[in-house]
Structures are given as structure tokens and as C-alpha cells.
Length: 244
Length: 379
Image (cartoon, rainbow over all chains, first blue to last red; front, side, top):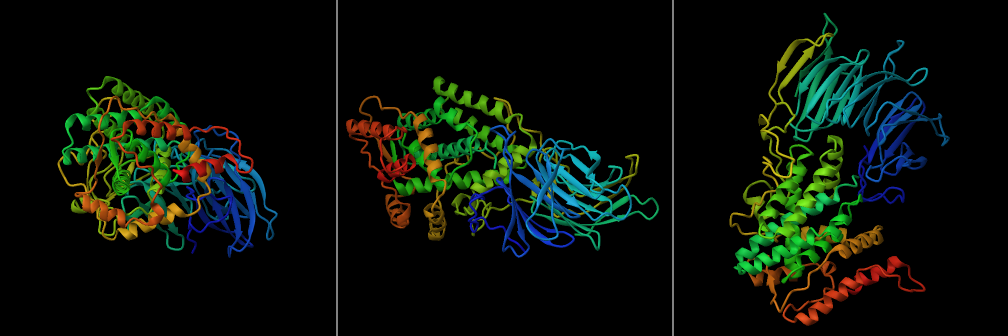
């Protein structure tokens, strides 16, 4: 378990009282890296936190004086680590099996507003299957395939509220929104199949237990809910039921 | 961090300060014309054009200590004087009140309505002074122009920036404790009943759709809260019904303004820890303070207007007691300005104002930043 303690950080690159300090374990085929994002850039550590293997400073070149510059949203996809930024670009880092020779291999375009979250799942073994979803402040979701190259498959438009959190499981996209709703979409088509009026305030985070298909939503209304995700046996449409 | 947070923080805290001062002036039976003069002087200093210009520049938030210095200067912009203990208490009340309002905003954007509530009431205080009214309206228009078009995501960032500023502040306020909106450990109670925000549906419904978007199934569930439909949306115009009550004057009914100072050593201890920790931003903060104070025009009093001291506590003894329990580290070396000796006071004020301008002083060994630090130490 990692707790991001702002008091304890003495890295010169990470300022005190930093916003958006996100932490994520990235599980790659041959190693696990601990990735931190902040308003200065992206840090990657060996999984025991002992050594920093890579530091990427954010390029604030295009930012106007009123724009906040930061990185937000971290996910592992195959041997890549994807990190979202304030501009909407998603940075894709190529990670070797060991050592610090990490390279920024491309920047994905698709979003115009700051990235909020990224979700990935291992490809299900079929062709043309979506294995990554990116979300942003406008509520837009972009659905990607990572093999053989990162390709944008479809976009799901927002509706005026941010999408702070997104999950991907068995071709189902679960998105939590600033108006307290959880939406479930079919990743291949982008169609909305389930709309849950889940919370009375903005959703802070979603988490998913992949072995049992249970989705957890936490929101600023102080409630936590758990939902069971499934597919209808007849139509194979996505369904959800409240558990807690 | 959002670089557009400072104006909202400053104006709302300033509004709370004025509410509290207004209530204390009435409680202490300060004559009406003197009370009005104090409020007018502070408001006109707050909304001074040059000051507002500096304030609205995109910039990061600085520490609570830096901000407190501004409010201390503001509170002394007139013939009223506050002791350190009273100033501490004033600042505590101001910050906890605005923290409460930010936490309870239904939508991140509603912090703008809270700001407008403060400004509406401020305009009520100065309704007989058209020049100051104009200054406030000008600021109002600037707020509408800058914040009116921000997206929900940008307001969420502002909200988070504000909440980080208020993190770990758990001072107990007697009024909040009485109303049961704050617990004994200083944490605020987040209500799970009442209206949902505008744009949010009542929780409790799952709808399922087919490939054509037609609803094929629905499930209702018990949410756990007790919510009702959203009211109509408040107005974001210069004039209009705000609907939201957060940010209106909660002291307008004559209620005693107290903070619970028992257990205060814990409160002040956490305050102190943050204050005395070496701040890598010290130089930047001082530059910011110097610029803001430079824009503050402290009016020279016309004629020998006798000053007076305002007490935030219910008795002088209480204030003295509070002063004794203040940790050493928090004491600034403050120049005691005797309000009765106007000549001396004018000169003192002029000297302080002069010191806050950044002048190129030839100093062989120390940098400009250290100069400012030295100046602050001398105060």
C-alpha cells in the first residue's frame, strides 16, 4: 500500500502542497514500477520505492498563463506506461524489461481538455479489441487499441460534466461522472447500456474487482456503493445490479 | 493547482471578516458613525483598483501565514485596532467559515454563488457610498467575466485547490458546534439529506438500454441518503436571487461569536508547525505580499479621529488569557500604533508603506530576497 504523504516528500522537483499527486503501481510483463504524477512531471520508481529510474519533466510550452500544468491518469498497457496530461495528450512510455532506458515513444491525441483517468485491460485475445480507455474533464471518453500500434477506435462524447474515473472490464467501460452518475458502455460500439443514478455528489473514484465483476463507486456524498456487473444471457447486453 | 483561486479565496475570507467585524462592532456598542467608517474604510481598501489588479493576476495560492498578514493590514485600515489574540480569533473564524462553505457547496461552480452572496451583503454595508459601491460592482463584473465561462472541470480544480489550503484546519467554532454542523473533533458534518445539486438526478435508479438506446429494464434501489429534487438554479448575474444560502451573513442575528479555546493548544500547535517549518517559497511569498500591499492604499484619517480597540472575545480578561496561551512562535514583532497620537501614526504608516515598496538597495552580500526577509523580521 502506498500513501502519498505530502509532508514527507523532499524531492526538489515535487513542491509541497502539490495538487494532483497521483500514484499507481504499473504491472508490466517483467517488472512492476511505481509511477507518480504531479504538476512538474512524472517520476517512475522501482517497485520498492528505492530508486527513481526515470523522470519526465512536463512541457508547458503551449500553456497560457491561466492553465494549470500537470500530469494525471496512469495505466500500464503491455510493455508501455501511459500517462495523461493537462493538454489532453496521453504520453506513451516504452519500458524495457529492466534498467532505466525508458523512452517516450509517442503522444496520443484525442482529447482537448485535461485527462482525468486512464484504464486498461489485457487484450482478450481477439482482433480489434479495445484495451484502453482515456477520460477527460469534459466527460469525453476515448477508446483505444494498443496492438500493433495505439489506434483510436471510437469516442464517447461527454455531456457537460467531468469524468473523474474510468474502468475497463471484459469489454465493458465503467465511467463515473461529476453529476454522481455511473455509466456502462459497450467498448466495441461505444453504446450506452446502463445508466445508474448512483450518488448525490461528484464521483471521486471507481474501482473494479476483475475476478468477480464487482464495481465500487465512491463519491463526495460520503457514500460507497458496490455494483455487480454482468451480461444478460439472452441478449448479452450489459447489466448492473446494486449490492451495497 | 488552479492559478485562478486567489481572488475567490481572498474575497470570501474578506466577506467573512466583514460579517464578524460588523457583529462585534454592534455587540461592543460602537457608535453607528464610527462603525460605518470602519467598514467603509476596510471595504474601500479591499476593493481598491490597484489591489484588485494584483489579486486577479493568475498565480498560485500562498501560505495561510502570508494571507493572514494581508488581513491583519486590512483590519487596521481604519481607526479600529485589534490585539494579536483578537486577530488570531478573527482569522480562525474567517477560515473555518469559508472552509465550511466550500465543503458544503453542492457543485464546484457554486463557490461562485457563495462569493456573490458575500459581495451582495458587502454592497449592503456600503449602500450610502456610491464611489465604493462602484468599486465593488467593478470587481463583481470582473468575477463574472473571468469565472462565468469556466468549465465544470476547471471549477473542480479550483475546489480542490481551496480544500488543500484548508486541509488540517479543525478549529472548533461554537456556533457550528451548537448548530451540529461541526463535530467535537472539529470535523464538519456532511449532510446526506436535502436537495441534490442542479444537474444531478436523485440517486436510486438503474436504467438499462438495448443497442438502439431504448430502455429495456429498470431497477430501483435504496440509496441511504434522504435527498429531494434540486431547487432552481441561482443567478450568476450582477443582480439576482442566489438561492444558495452559503456565504450569507450568519451573524446577522445577534449570536455570540466564540471559538472554543479549550483544546486550543492542539489547534495552535498544528498552526505553529506549519508556520515555523522552513518555507521554500518564503521569497516568492514576500514578493507577492509586497506587491499586494503596494496596491493597498491605507487612507490617512481626516482630522483627529480617535481610534478604538475591538475585542473579539466577550471580555478583556478572556482576551488577555488567550494572548497568554498563544505559542511564542506565533508572535510577530508588531509596531503598536497609538491611535490617539495621529501625527506619529501618520508617520509610522507612511514609513511602513514605504518599506513595502521593492527598492533597489545596494547590499553587497545579501540578495534582494534576503532584504525582504530582513524587513519582515524588523516589523
